[in-house]
Image (cartoon, rainbow, N blue to C red; front, side, top):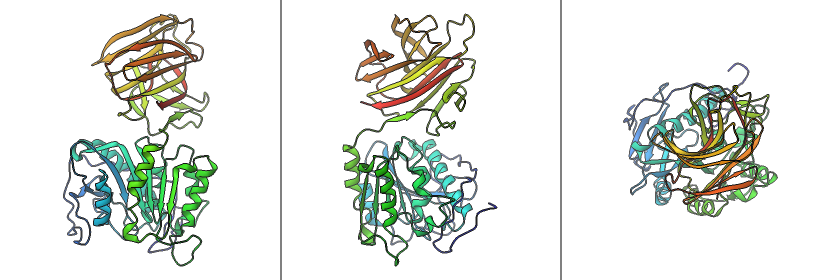
Length: 442
């Protein structure tokens, strides 16, 4: 990276924004990472050690897995260690606390030391690579990749910071210890962690060993945690923050059960996108078609497609929620009655979901798609012209599906075909525009 200079050594972090391009390893389960190094006896012993997740450098791109006991997919504590340590840096106490809450620890490796801008850029890219690899192999590791706490200690807080604030709906919270050491803040014109915090940032907890802020005897100044909390406060989301000081280093993870309890009582997450930045959010799942967050229209646009185009967001485990959007069939083909812009809900895969749309003749349709076969649940005239912008919403609670157009309830349908899944929009043989997508759990 030409215009970025390294900062300090040993515990220094330099930052640039260019992310390297890597690819995941094409394996379905653990590979023993040898390199003549195993986890030392004074650390917790992983169930699967040295699982290779990337193809660039197996001495760097590996992870260790500490499995929570019991049946069923386990939520993930995605942990990145401090400078100079390695993926083995999980203490018996940390493992006991986190596994005791039913979370599997995935301790991931990148560059052991972050000393240059390129190395931090690699770490940011590696964090995304880890997520991609774990999602591809979730069944093999018995993990729930829709329920993740991003955790980092010192160096690890910087390595995972971009992922933690990416808006990925699978990330439920951030647990950061000795977070954002002084070196992180050395080049604010290059990277300022405060700038990554948005009103959609997830709940965050800080634990620090120093007992007070504004210190000069430890690079892990708690003031840095308070700086982030100040941003949360300024955005009106200060109730999502917590911090504790003067914690013995072995006890930095003891607050985790309390943090989880706070997540259970907090307001449910709401995903929304007004498509104003021209960049398609990476948290979307695209099942079919070509989609673009269009700068000119400041809306989501689908191109003409040979069949259908579907894009969704939210958790696959979501059951009761409202999904709404403003829709328009833009420059329709003359006489093409089958062109539609609509919503999808409780989508478990591209062949199983509910859909709702207004046809070009103004008829509102709600259908259940099961194994690719469609069943009509509602067919009623609305007087809406779908070539002009209108709002459509579906509220799903248990077996009831309420469908509304322009804020007016049209019908309540009872159907039990689909019980959970993601939500989003669908275009069928349609050059369509979508705006103000909201997925709000009930």
